[in-house]
Image (cartoon, rainbow, N blue to C red; front, side, top):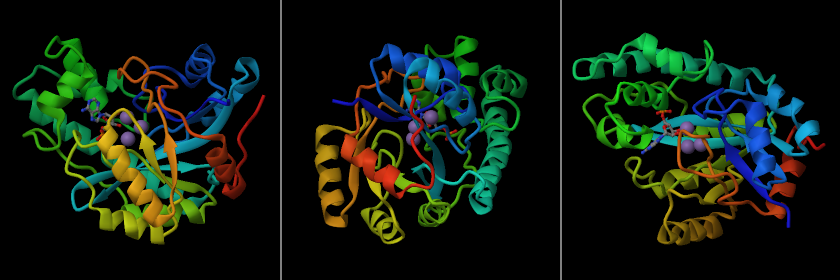
Length: 282
Ligand code: AMP
Ligand code: MN
Ligand code: MN
Ligand code: MN
């Protein structure tokens, strides 16, 4: 059996390990293929690619694209797309820019009650221009002892229904599916039934995404219960979508462990057959 974990994050977004460290962790975890899917960026691809040979881990290049519909955040995994595609690159850029102003406003809101500064948050974030987000604000809150870990900070103050929250710009999920396909990529809807995060995405929107060319839907993810997964099975069968599973690993930023959920070799093969790029193998 080939162990494929197609959804992980590095310090190029809100993971805590560099792409090289992530590839080494994948080897230590006994994986064969890892998908690097940092939020709204591809900046970690080259470093991860350089570690394919030394680690023996195959690399599925991707990104987790932030999308928004009626105030609901939607995460779309895009795989093997042409990174030189201008419309897609422009969307990434616009989202990352909007994330900066939004994070500053959340920090401003929080600073009324917690002694954190924008400079502190930036020191936990990715290099300049990278996708700064709530996990980095959580890191600053943890560093001053306000919360024991990121998860606690999310539950108490960073939740979208909380008083400090601010939205950032993001593309509509149906447009994003079209953009990924137009760039030769494979779109997969991430954790569609992760209930604790926010209001659920209406199933009708998944129908729209399927019509726009959605390839798959994430089933096995720790934020989805058995009942959620049965619901995903029903949606996937109805809309003829492939199903994936992943760890959504964030290094020490989350309890998620590499390889805790996996994707089948068949599904990876279809992604590669349809994708513009290839999986990089040692
Ligand atoms: P943002 O993109 O800035 O809105 O932050 C979203 C990110 O925060 C996600 O990609 C997760 O990594 C993380 N996140 C979301 N909800 C939680 C939660 N309840 N506990 C811990 N981390 C979370
Ligand atoms: Mn994340
Ligand atoms: Mn996500
Ligand atoms: Mn993720």
